[in-house]
Length: 333
Image (cartoon, rainbow, N blue to C red; front, side, top):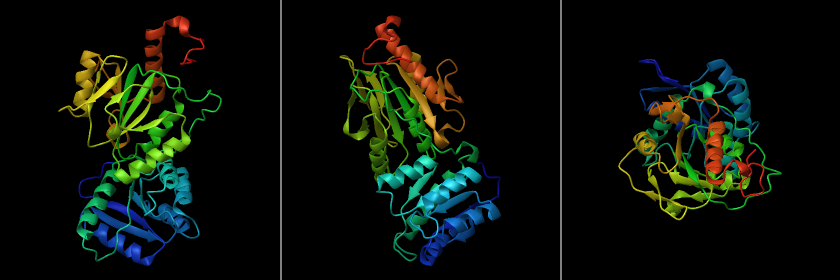
């Protein structure tokens, strides 16, 4: 949502301990653009408060009595979707991280160490920044990721990547990215290179969670300099790199002075190597798929279908239409 000039971002704080509620209220109240609309002690109270107060953003603890944060979030996203920031010390647990992000959480924030800690000013700035980013996520775009099962797909076999899908996963985009991955044919000759706007600890938990759920192999982008096989590659947001064909059927990651949008324009003009550019979350609010003919990002409804079509074109280009229905490493349906 875009806040009207002078209108503060109204936040609902949900935590089971009075100490932490006071700490979060104090931290958020330091920012002139934010006001705490109310507090709740557990998930059930949070549901009542959401209906009564209609906050812009919710900060939500995970481990609470009566109703935990994950259960509360399920109800919130069904009844009245809101941008949610999980405030918890459980971001290191992959199952918790994946559940929250799959349900549409914008981000995780580690619980502050205390109301009078030496780093409270830094904590205040960091939490306020996350809340402001969350407020820009349109509630209508927040959707639970319903994951397609790859059971019966024959399992994973390494195969050559003929092209790269480069994805900017901004705040609020983690669930949509998971949904896209789950809908892609695992036999397509595609490498999906995703740049995550997440703190390192959260990104590690997200990666571990993806590995538990998907057939796709998940690689860490900071550990690789080239892409040889199809699969999912995760890289930190702050280290965006370009790609180039390196011969021998692989792509090399290289440093570039371009940002994501300018690089998409530059590479689309050259059309080599084959690549598609996607933006998710806050980053994709004004356009989620790069259109080479328009030289800008445009909004499309079904990004996974566009990526699938891109992958099929690459396969047919390499193997010819007679490959349809073959028993080769890539089944095209």
